[in-house]
Length: 461
Ligand SMILES: *Cc1c(COP(=O)(O)O)cnc(C)c1O
Image 1: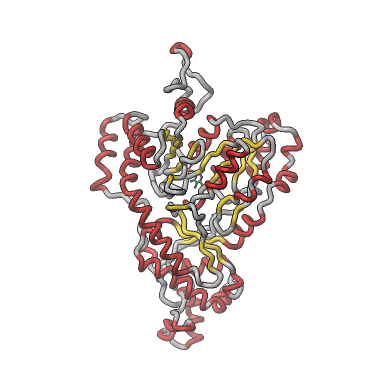
Image 2: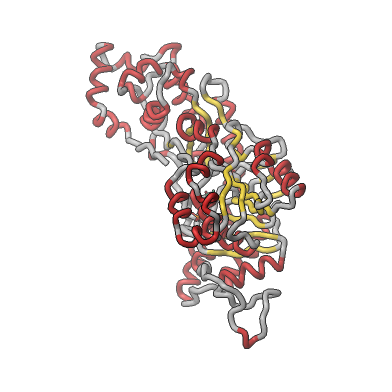
């Protein structure tokens, strides 16, 4: 993921003094610069105009209010009970409640929520798992950690999500599960995907690590599949620093997840006789009490923040959707609420006089907007070949299944490649916690760049 550095206006002018001087010299004075752009649009900051917004004005992330948030955390710290106990159980209850699931299990992070859920759904060596390429590495690594084989299903560039129309062509007699990712915090087409899964008797794991409180037909994502996995990493909509959770309505499965995450000790219906000790091969990925206390504090603001993100995203989308070359995300009709971990659109340079996406992002950064180009394609990264070369994979799979050239050929995702390499533009979720004026400033920044694309293109080849 390529981050574009944000500059304060002063830093920016200093850094670009040569460019700035060029622009000043070209027009002969500083003053007219403000009205440099055509059609009454102000000059872009990258050409010496005033930045659309000040970097320092965006809502800070994570949000923390000592007044309301610290009491519980301090209680935990002073109690000396830091390993998993009442506070984690409390957080699990509240999280299950928030998403409308029977049970929730807190773990160390979203990555391990996926690893544990995949493991306890019995997905192992020889199994194929359908997964979109437009996601964070952990989605795919959780499949590999369990010895299974990721099979990539290309995305629908309009929605950024796994394209349900491309799933069935990828199903073989080894396919065991679909790992659906609600990327950007926007729900995938769960209606279609659940139907396909049912038809082919496939397990569904929802990677909802970006999709806290998002909904399809008024039901929270994470509760459609056999398991839903969440992340509470610091950038996520419910930030704890690190943390994760599995949710499910299947009590026996959740008992097994508990046992697996806690050294294989018996739990609930996952029992052995007392003298048996650990009942399964296991790991230890328990959440701590102070993490849970932070989570409980953060959960109190999640719903209202989610509403704000939805309102601002909708407004921002309405303000930029008619700018030629800017194609905001589309949501499926069944979606009743987004989580908007990211605000994304596709950029088509043909409408910006051929201005490259990098140049566009640089110009946006100069306007004071935190933006990035998002993910790079996952399905061709070196970790796959490395895993295939490992002793475990060499023993589990026939040679033909581990031929990386053949694998790459079978897992081509051209639409995702285009999205990653040329089109996607992201704003992070904290931007959507700003005001309507902030949203207007974003639209204004994009418009300024659109109107002056030709000149910006000349700045750096
Ligand atoms: C963040 C994220 C994860 C992993 O969660 P961590 O808590 O960072 O381990 C998995 N999948 C997706 C889509 C994510 O965004």
